[in-house]
Image 1 (cartoon, one colour):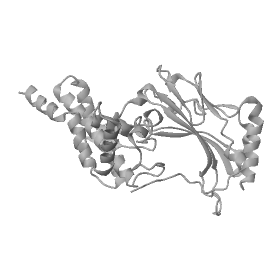
Image 2 (cartoon, rainbow, N blue to C red):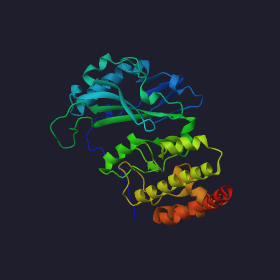
Image 3 (spheres, rainbow, N blue to C red):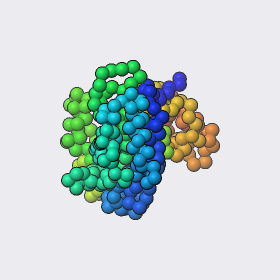
Image 4 (cartoon, rainbow, N blue to C red):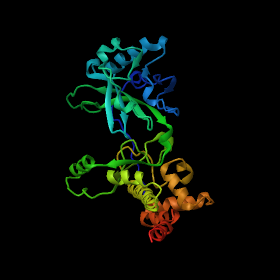
Length: 346
């Protein structure tokens, strides 16, 4: 069964507006990237670097502002209805903050190089405050006010018409998963989300946030969050060299991989989140080799497997996750670790 979800913006937008952000770039410390590009920080200076948006080259800045104003008018929007907005977000820190919002009618007040490191009170944005995980900086032209519904025209407040994204990656971003402490506050959040009271004794929970794309290269996406009971994490840290700790860490990895396989199978049937813009049931291992799913398929098939054998594993992950996760258990050798833990405790 083929399943494909594509982002569709059913709005008539003038080309001057759609291309307005194409020349913008993002500066983080002494590094710069263009829209849809990324910066890699590998020296633990993430939380010390300053951030800014360079909207256009110096000799193009006046044209940039003119394109925003004329492009909005020619698209059927009064410039006062639209705003240039910058969002800084971090899935790891659960932070989503508005760093800039300026109506297009006031675009002459915009600085060509706009600092976005801190709030108006001088505090650093939360999403720019982690040395182990990166962040996303997104620039939009969006509707600042709601208006009457009209065919082929945006009318809901915050609907965006133009967007570009910059990514800052840290060396730790390439980790396959990140454990986070599952405390009472997080349990209550999960209970409220599902309108239940069933998370009280949960030890492990895997969360796929909006920045996690299982089929994207690991350098271009967030990884799943593995929530682990906070008391268990503390105990593991205190007894990290014990056989029991080694076994529990292996179970954590298994829980994460199993959850990823089932989520991949769910998305392949068309039940995944909006924005999945690929046909998951037709992608090959070669196309997914740098992704989280690709790494899991390679681990299951083994280091000497052929591309065809890895494709077979990938297909099984889509169609029969029960079997695929049994293969995962075999490859990580859970059985031997269990038996060794019994021997060491006698």
